[in-house]
Image 1: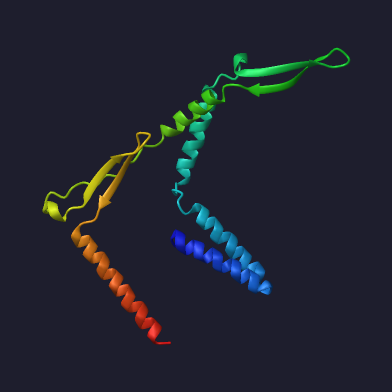
Image 2: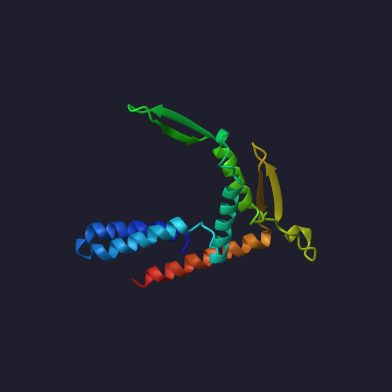
Amino acid sequence: MNEIDLTTKIEGLKKAIAEHKDFAGNYESDLVKAEQELKDYNKIALPPVVFDDIQEAIEAGIEEFDFSDTGNFDIEYGIEYDGKVHCESHELNDTYELTEKIVKKVHALFVEKLDTIEPDHHKPVETQPVVEEITVDGGETEVTVTPTEDEMNDFNKKIEETKEKSFKKRTWF
């Protein structure tokens, strides 16, 4: 299922729940399942071993942080009525440093994948896709690919075939 199908399914299930209260339990469980699938749609599926590696990297990043350094904390003390000193608040100052250590360890587990299209040197230049790189504000590079004439012709043929099939289906009613 793609994102549009999942969104359509969710809307349909919501309508079905409203119309059929007696089957609401079944529809509601299907709705929860479809909503979870939509949330997970763009997530990358990772094997359990990778999750273990991420957890170990986070633990290693936390272990590197010096929790014994009192400069990393704001501690506010107070005195009770009987003269005892107590800690009223204890706050971590350097969350940025801790976050950086954790992120550095987790990033070390992965390699950044850049989407590139390799030219096919066996085809004429006119039939190859055109790749344009544009630098956007903020220094990010945006890559766009212009389809070849052959790809556009194939795409248009598929659209026409789909139109013909859907027209044939509707004429049988």
